[in-house]
Amino acid sequence: MWADEIRIIIEDRKHGASELAQYCLTLLAKQAQTSPATSCSELITHLNLLANQFKEVRPSMAPIQNLVARWQFRLFSLPQNEIEDLRLEIVTLTQQLQQQSRQAVTAIAHQVVDLVGPNATIMTHSLSATITATFKVLKNYNVNAIVTESRPLQEGYQLAKQLSEWGIKTTLITDAQIGLFVGKANAAVVGADTILGDGAIINKVGTQLLALAARYQNIPFYVASETFKRLPALAAQAHLEEKAPEELALVTLSKVTIRNIYFDITPSDLISAYITEQGVYYQSDKLPFFTVEA
Amino acid sequence: MWADEIRIIIEDRKHGASELAQYCLTLLAKQAQTSPATSCSELITHLNLLANQFKEVRPSMAPIQNLVARWQFRLFSLPQNEIEDLRLEIVTLTQQLQQQSRQAVTAIAHQVVDLVGPNATIMTHSLSATITATFKVLKNYNVNAIVTESRPLQEGYQLAKQLSEWGIKTTLITDAQIGLFVGKANAAVVGADTILGDGAIINKVGTQLLALAARYQNIPFYVASETFKRLPALAAQAHLEEKAPEELALVTLSKVTIRNIYFDITPSDLISAYITEQGVYYQSDKLPFFTVEA
Image (cartoon, rainbow over all chains, first blue to last red; front, side, top):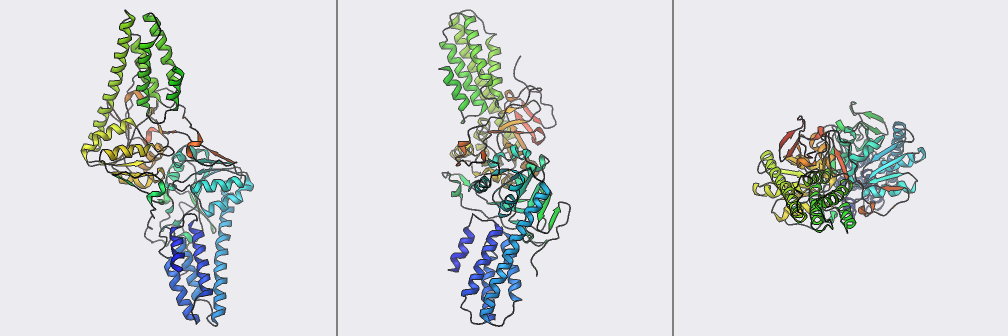
């Protein structure tokens, strides 16, 4: 059921924005193969409607909106001759976009290596496909990691587990210890769920604290992010998703409201540079990169 | 056994520095009553040796050192006539010092009310006897509270429970949400385990992040603390105690070191004012207060 697929994406907590965006494309490609449409225009209309449904499912994750929009843009430019050919073309288009995204992540990882150099200690917060991919490259460069656990779901522990398997010496801390440890890092590097129009980023809650502590202790704070995570310059600030308070596993109290907002916003003035597949943009640069070809 | 009592203080995680300091005096008063000493000078020598043992038990907690030192100073000035009289005098002296400490906390609470006014929203971090006492006064002034949970032992949850019982509307958040919520408060107010010579404070880890976020969002950050928590101006920085990593309840990983440092240091430039029983001292003031009469 399509509604079930949508709900999986809404409720997912294990994947970053980039991975979920790719998963949306996978679902669309499957629909391209199984849609009951009988003509090319009917198929495109159907898929376009389905694609539109992804745009609001994760309001804090611009990549879903951007990657799906890019997919829609390409969809309309495909040759509409035979419906069976079109179905195959759509699968190919989807694979191309997904491959581009994977290549972008690898390109970013190498730029991080260039920027922080070998033998560095890198601090990060939460779990990001881009950061994981970066460490996969960095493991050959004798780096150490400092990783926050990222309450309540401990995504940071998952990252530490992966780093441990790769043999990267890692220090795992509670989120409250960010200020104690950032000074031991050569750089803080985080992913982003969304880059807002003004250059601020939406990322897992606590990212803003890491950026503040890094700035206070003169440690560079880098955002490693594919360009398609950026919203247009004039886009309004995205909604910050809140999850169930039960995730904190605390007994409820009569006069106490437990809050569990999942993302926070880190303003651009706290960001030393954006590391993208198109290059490194420093805080003073105007961010030129956009991805929605519309 | 005296060694057992010492260990209880070393391992205690439920009480702030001020409460533990008072508890040390209670133990000394008990010893005054039960000491096998047969002369006044023998009793004083014995108690003085026991008191000295408290000085290093909690290196991040200056109040223990300061309050015990104050007790020792008074001990030597007591009349040494009859040993049984002296035992009683020591009990009285102990009660006086403890009462002064309790009165100081109440005085501080009223100063906080004067500073933040009624109907305010106050954000705090961790659990502090001074902060709890402050909210006990503030509950009559229609204030709201924002409380961080304070991983790993969730002392903040204990505070929220107390506030709930007092009918104070409270928002409880994870430590990572500090940056999201500090802007909703009229002031951040924390206790201190120690005020260092340069005005920096040692307090539960995460306090520095609250101070950074408060400064970034122009929210005043107050330290509510008895003057006897201050170390002499030239005192070296205290050691930050580290607790067992098992408290984080995370499965160990081969290349991963789990750290659990219990305190952090918040530099004085992030502190808007110190609220003490002797008055309010602003950031620009030289801090005059000392308590060890030696």
